[in-house]
Amino acid sequence: MPAGKIVKALSGFYYVLDGEQLIQCRGRGTFRKDKITPLVGDEVVYQADNDKEGYVLEIKERHNELIRPPIANVDQAILVFSAVEPNFSTVLLDRFLVLIEFNHIKPIICITKVDLLEETAKKEIDQFIEEYSNMGYPVLATSSVTQEGIDVLLPYLHGQTSVFAGQSGVGKSTLLNALRPELELKTNDISQHLGRGKHTTRHVELIHIGDGLVADTPGFSSLEFTDVEAEDLTFCFPDLLELSESCKFRGCLHDKEPKCAVKAAYENGELPRYRYEHYLEFLQEIRDRKPRY
Figure 1: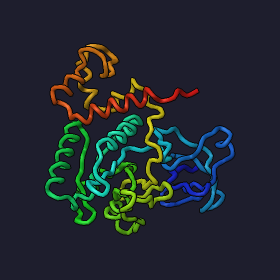
Figure 2: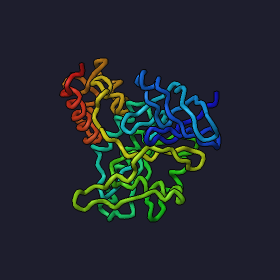
Figure 3: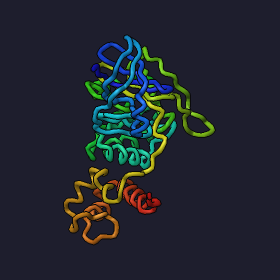
Figure 4: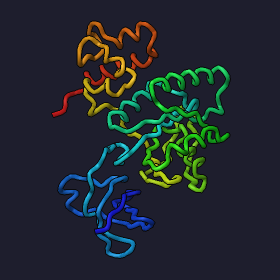
């Protein structure tokens, strides 16, 4: 049986790429019975009725999957955050980082619109770049207008399946257009009334950029920590995880426990204050979450 990768899902059809051939497929009824939905990024076995149409018969085992946006087998997430319009937000970035780390996807932070920065704001953004770089994250400063950082981002996409994620209005589609101008993806300016952009991407689709695949998505429709447990949270903060090896108690949640290395680092100014404060905020949110039955 032929095999390929789903590169687009739209209106009940799954577009399977097999070599250079794109086959429009429907899912077999057994998927509905088994409550399995084929996702963009799935490696599948299909049956073709002709050279254009067929049916997805089997979904191969996934390495990972995201539900909102619906995509599977992602190697890395390019977390796109604008320096301004909308303003850079560490709490929103940390929330994205937790969700990406929890799903065992490599995060790369991409700060856009740096050409719009005034001198004082540039120093602040440079400080954030240094701090997140020290945490071990690749951080890129880019501008789709001046092309700054575009040539640095491109090698990161080499041979990878990447998802571009971030709040609306930060310039995801504009960035993709800069990477591959012939895409001509639709973009919208930020709303001056709402202070954020409108979603311009309506479905998930994998597109070729260089020899990598990139997903332009409608964005994360939920940023809740639905599946993250309190015990998981430290593992989603690599900087805290490294410090936690020196905590007195195994399984320390770095909240009210004595002789906690994370709290000590925070109090001594060895850890950016916002990182630990966001951790506590997220920890409380998880604790307050209603139990699922």
